[in-house]
Image (tube, rainbow, N blue to C red; front, side, top):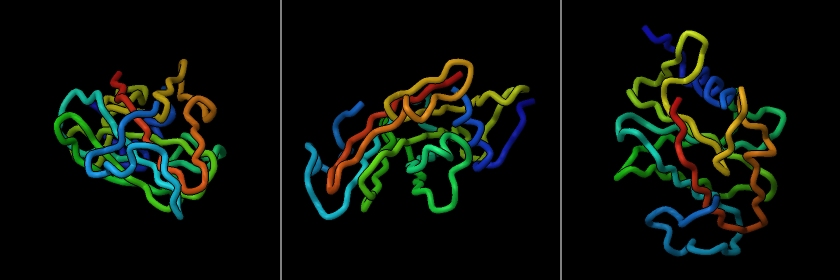
Length: 161
């Protein structure tokens, strides 16, 4: 029987294992990179093996913490999968380097199933579709840069083990 862990622990496990695209629907104004008072990151996630459950998205601002448990104050979103796509939007994002992580809680229980050595049995994903070798992808593989006032669309494809 698979082991169960909390969502926070699940995010940690997901991040420890190892593109730009069109903006989400409803953001037609953001089709290109626009200048505005605050930056915005528009995350579009595809490649789900099912539409069940919830999708947890975290916007990382710190290389030191990546890809462990998101520290307090890390912008996060919980979204549904609609027609094979999950979308999250982060507004008023300060300019600079960032990365995005995604966890598909397929059974919607708020916990991630793992195998006996802790490998996630539910989907994970990273900005730039970063993949790790025998572990998590590093910060440099997943990082992107947001310019002041920019609207940055980020596409992520889910990974299932």
